[in-house]
Length: 274
Ligand code: ADP
Ligand code: MG
Picture (cartoon, rainbow, N blue to C red):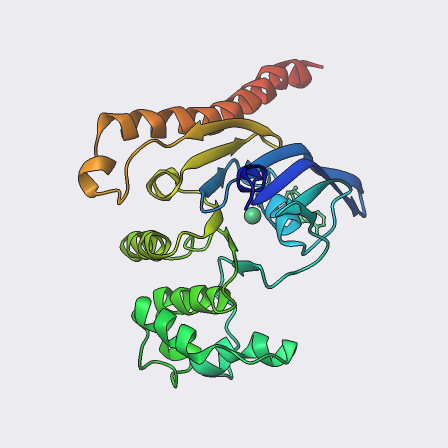
């Protein structure tokens, strides 16, 4: 590999803009978002609800087209779903009538390709689901279902993993367990990961960098480096540096929302008087 090729980002988003056409008119969801993710890097995206995080992630995955701008994977435009890109959503999306094994096989059946059984067994082992292949989704806890979704996403050996609030529906302890699991999997085999999360703790625990988006239309408002060594122990996560970073990110997100509310309430009395 040439030196130039090795410095090429794994994933690059250039001026991504997405306008949704809705019944009440055009809606600008994201506006000229640019972002580079290096191979093996974990980047989190945080921002107020509705600011366009999912829109941005779907564009990265090729699940929908941008209005303008582009997404490049290894320098080539992403124009549709690719086996190079694995996705995990907030809901595990397991088919309720298929057992766990058959759920993991499902995307291979659709594509008409043969799953790598050894790799999948290794993944199932890794996430502690060995021996659960015959269980139906309803027999699995939320955390187990999400672990199965992670196995399904990694079963293709994607070089990029995109996760949209993957642990948002789990209780706090299960969520921390899942964070440690993702860290372990990543330490074994560093994959490029982009993670959307509402949890700043989760973002700091897992990420090399954290992208803060502005309220809609979503723009990249700030990018924070997360300099803490891995694995990120409880001791590291309890330091003042982590506390300070958490607070400044929170302020960037909530501060913007507050200023929006402040504006609203500032004009309210004048409107009431008129
Ligand atoms: P986030 O993930 O940050 O909560 P989304 O990307 O889901 O934000 O949504 C950004 C904005 O785009 C929101 O106002 C949402 O209502 C709107 N939106 C999302 N998907 C669609 C769609 N398919 N059609 C129309 N509007 C959409
Ligand atoms: Mg979303």
